Length: 380
Image (cartoon, rainbow, N blue to C red; front, side, top):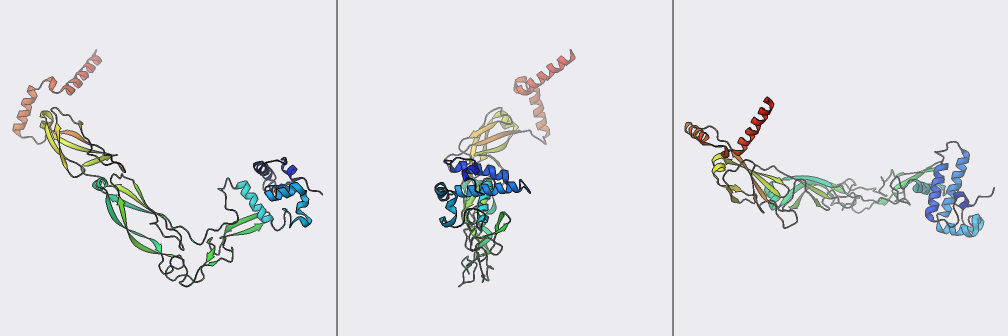
């Protein structure tokens, strides 16, 4: 029985683009796929026919030959074996699954690209706690990190000195092997070399063939001024050494800042809650407060200061990371009520209360005036 024209099989014209060919193939391959039509021999026949047509037309050289000579281009003296279901069928089926499912499965490397005999080392995390003063000034810290480093005996190759890894004979250095089951080709990691593409017959006695050993390293970490809680510092190449000479991973320093006894931080601003005596708040005066840089400054307290009043000190806050800017410092006043009064103090306060007028405590007077009006309305 004569073969149908490949363009007719795919339902496209002869000038169809590569994308049009691929789209037509995907539609028909899904329609006639054996999994979607179990036991349907006619669907299986169409599936093979569609595969053969697309396998020919997707290749520019095969398509040019087919356009000129038709099916005869792949028969007789025109070339070895056609694109049908001979020894190369497994390879063409692998291409089918690349075309059908590559987009959904993240794609895969054609030609069994090897992973290589070396692998990148893992990234490491180190948690460091610093003080607020250290975050203000910045510092250089020394840390000790237990990690995997390159084996000096074998220079990271994993092989005994004087020997070298050999190409895996199972996969030919590809790191993957294929097995054909019916119409399907299954590709998996080579069990002999574990996907590395090479094997070590005589491993290094120090690192047992891994190319790395565990060791505690001392590293210097530069912490810039202005860092905040949760800041991450990356030390490139200071992570775990790679397997068999592979590149090292990175080390990430995660910073946390200890709570401070005097200051609270909000971004680049510093807050300091300062208790003020009742007399200072009433009469006015000045207080001396500390600053985050280790200095001190005087703050003028105006007469009649209430709890919650804030005094702003410009430029006395935290530096902004990687800039010349600096935040502010805020003094938050808290008026303290005297306790454990002496008899004389009580008498004086009582006298003060008797002499007080409404304008001395406008907030409390106004509040209770509103309360009295509220009760009066309820009684009407």
